Amino acid sequence: EKRMISPSEYQEYYYLIENKHIEPDALLMIIKYCVDIKSASIAPSYILTVAKNWIFDGILTCEDVEQRLMDLARNSEDVQQVLKTLGIRRKATEEEYRLYLEWKNELEFSQEIILHLAKKAKAKGAGFNKLDSLVNKCYTLKLESISEINDYFNNLDMMFDLAKNVCKSLGLRYDNLETVVDTYIANWLSLGFEADA
Image (cartoon, rainbow, N blue to C red; front, side, top):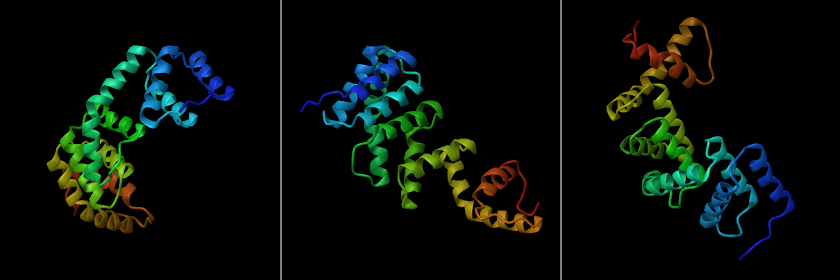
């Protein structure tokens, strides 16, 4: 099924080429990729979102697009494994692929750790977004092994109680103690302070 490109859609593509400096052929490759995964009846907004995300990631040439497509293909099975662990029975979205590549390449988490965190997210009845926040939390707290991650989560209830007591002692009130735990308590404990101190 074919569809016509509307003047406004064409204008958006032209804007990306002129102002974001993506090669026309690279943009065509992105469009083809989107059509291949979503079919010819794909919404222009989806294509534009993918194109803008890739441009933001610095993908501007045909070589860049080929590299991203190879990364996606190489990691396709791994991402599906993550979704399966989360209890999600569908193909990964482009955004989920992008997040997965970020976890692997930029944050340098192994598949084993990502799957371990996926199990934790599933246990909380959460999906991909919760997994993303867990991965980023582990990165921020410099939790780099499964044992460190397990220690952190096993101690989480104790840390929340401690945060409550510290705030009470200081005469402070927080509706959400997560920030106190992440910003102060976890860091103080990792520096070697004991709960009583």
